[in-house]
Image: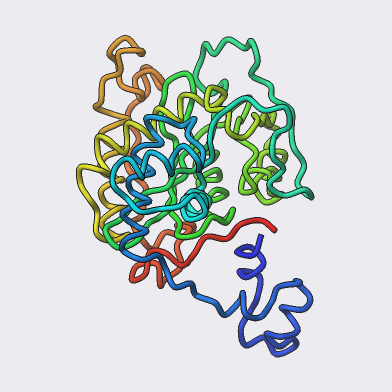
Length: 309
C-alpha cells in the first residue's frame, strides 16, 4: 500500500535521495509529497449520515445509499456517494460468489469458524476497522475483541487506512494474552505481511471471512454500533485528541462497568478474566510508540486514505 511505502522513505538519507528511494519503492514522488486536502464540510456531513444509516442498513450499496440520501433532501449522485463510501471503507453486505481481493499479492487464509462453538476466552479473537466522524474531519478506529467475552483487548486510531495502526493494536493485544484463532475480513490491512507475519510468528491460526459478510464478524460489528451510539455520536468530538481521550474513557467503561445481557449481566472483563484482578491502565494518549498517528494528525485529522493499488 502507498502509505506503507511512504513510511519506508527516509528523508535526508546520505546514500539515496528522495527521488531514488521513490523509484526503488515504485512510489510516485507526488504521492510521497501529497498531504491530502481533506473533505469539504458538505462531504463530511454526508459521510456522517452515511455512517449512521449504514449501521441500520448495511446491505445498502452506493445505489441504495444514494436513493436514501435523495429522499432525505440531499442533492447527490451515485458517483459521489460511491467515492465517499470508498473513503469510509464501507461496502454493501451481501452473499457473493467471489470475494474481493484487496491486494492480489497478499495471501488469503481460509475461514476457520464455520460450525465452531465459542465456549471460552482466548479461543477466538477478531479485529476490524471502522470510520469515526469528527466535526472537521474523520479518523479510523481498529479494535481487537475476544469473541467469548466481548472484551476489548486493544484499540488504535489512525488518519489513514494503512496497516501500521492495525499491527500496533495486534501487538498490544498479544502482549496480554494469545488466542487460538484470530479472525478478520480480507481487507488489505489484515492480509498484509506485516499483520499476518505477527500472527504466524506467534503460532496463531489465521482465519479470514469473505469481506462484506458481517455475520462472520458479528460481535465486533455490534461493538461498533454500541461505541458510536453510546459515545461517538453523542459527544460530537472536535479533534483527534478529544476523540482519543473520549474513547479511552468509554472503552474503560465498556470493558469494566457496562453490563451485557448476553453475558448474564456481567461485564466483559468479568466474563473474560473471571477471578483475575482488573489490570491497570497502560495506554498512553498521543505519544505512545505505536499510536498509528503522525505528529500532524493532532492538527489535521484527515490526510486522505490510502488504498491498495
